[in-house]
Length: 48
Image 1: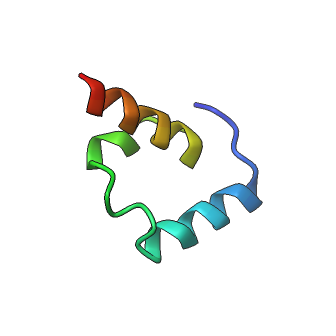
Image 2: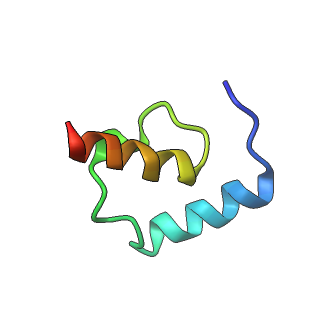
Image 3: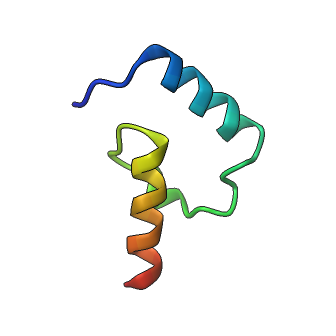
């Protein structure tokens, strides 16, 4: 696993619950540490 600061985890959770990332595919969130990695993964999935 990877370490993610508690503040980052809470902030990301609040943003996810608020629907900010509803446009991302579910697979983008699989096995990533932070929301930045999920955004990068979504870009990779879109280009595949």
